[in-house]
Image (cartoon, rainbow, N blue to C red; front, side, top):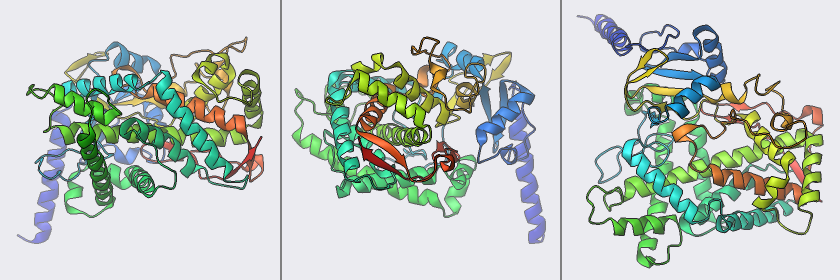
Length: 506
């Protein structure tokens, strides 16, 4: 038997296996476009604008439909009603976290995969079941104890805002790319929560951490990584950027473990300094509970990965929103002028903004909401999964099926937000100019998997942006008509194009 015949037989077997898996696993899933063997519907999706492809499919198959990303089915939720019914009304059933199946190498001594690419399998973001509930509950409680929504955490953010302003003054009004500075500020807030320490923006350890995170995020958003997510076997046989990501997180892991050891040596159980201390104290309290998630054996798996979760969720998303927000304000000078007028009226020039000011600043609040709505940072959310066999709208979705919530379909709903592709703070203002809430504002997702750091993110966005506009005018380096606010799409999110501006002291 020649090699060509063998190859044909192998490919035929793979095709038959693919067809069998697709048909046997389908059950009573919602309708959707016909998948190709092995590839599924990948070739029918625009990798540069996945949300646009989902909207196109929804017009044919309705608000709930099935896509095959490779050989596994995913159910897409499109539109507010489907999202609300699934994520909120049936929140427990849809509270699982869909996995990114491209796994990193095993951690030494653990004998199992710990990290799911991008980059966490366990911890807050990518864990499931009782583990997720326990760690999420602990994390939220700890953040609250350290001041989420209270003065102590606000003090930390205000302190960082002062450092941010100082860095911006050093630009002396010259053109600059704000990416690095705006990344440092929220990262330092997270560092203060986790390590009880903020870093100078030129500290080499800080710069190394920032570099590793930013590089991994960029690589994790690439087409190659998404192909590996659909076909994880490729990682075992082919070189690629996944190896670089593994090296980056090995570096970050090593740094965090070093800090954990320092905390263990100086721990005072009666005076916790930060998140790591709280975890270690909880570990000591539950040392006789063999079922506890807070054990030496779980130290790496839970503490380390939860810390990585907080870095990724609490740093990159906030800094990107800030960077995109400044670009929009640079373009829409009339909106910026109104925000600065409100800042002048409510806060003035001689004190720092505080969270108490927000309730008296409806226009600024509307602008912040509109920035998040308009940029649609993570169009298709992080993947969910169903925790049991679920009957949903006369379909039967098997346990473990991946759920893709289209946040774009809600944030850009043209009935709730007229002209959704237009940047307009009026979307969140009533006729009297008062702030108007909207149930369609799902920038932080919805239901059981809503972002655990939502309160911190809202605080940072308000205090950082108002502090900047209180102290600086934004000056473009090109004509207003040439400022491009079109997002640079990638496989995971929508990023602003690179740009420069001048921070001119008021």
